[in-house]
Amino acid sequence: MCWSGHECTHVCDIGLDNASDVEVWTRAAHDKSIVVSKDDDFVASANRPGDTGRLIWVRLGNCRNTALIAAFERVHDELVEAFHSGHRIVEVR
Image (cartoon, one colour):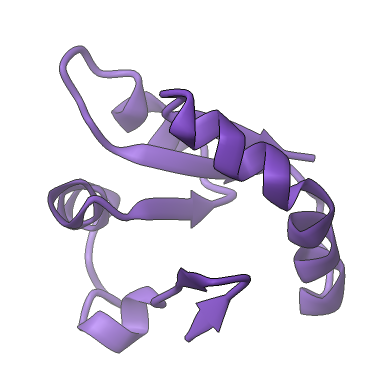
């Protein structure tokens, strides 16, 4: 799947639907992918010394996919810029 020119893959599509957060994080870091999650456990992983993973930390309450996509569209340029600038954790509120 592609969103705004960015390749997007759900964990279920790569056989990680039953994987631990550590397994997901390790795979994403290895693949140079960005994890998108509401789970603050990933923040701890991203803050480990020497870690190279990247995270979009979704800080929205429960919402429908349409609201989630609208939030991403609203901050798309800021997300891209933040990661290009070297940020490893970017919050979406």
